[in-house]
Length: 117
Image (cartoon, rainbow, N blue to C red; front, top):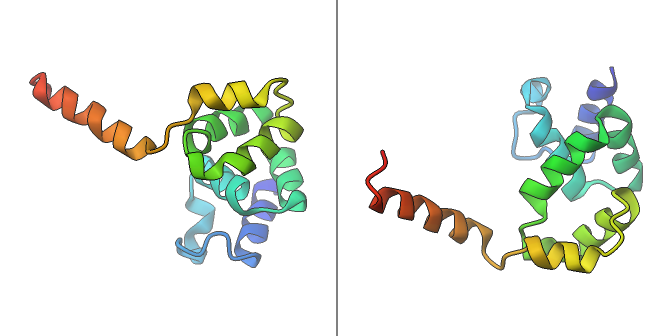
């Protein structure tokens, strides 16, 4: 029920614009969490935290949003007010890259050079 409310909120506010809204209920939790973190206002974030466990939300935040430097202000906001991280600037400095996709491509290329399939 709560998940459905979050999906309806995200659709109503056009946060799932790149997904088929008729199949939104089939989206994985990680995508719903990521889209809510990236695009929602405070009401949407409160709905998100009522629907999912804080640990799951934080895991998605750390893996999908924190590495992107372009979300620096958002990460400060989320880390300070929702995850209560005491030294958010140090936390982000350790985990942020300027080009996280490039870093992943480098890792994949290094695996290929090592002869892994």
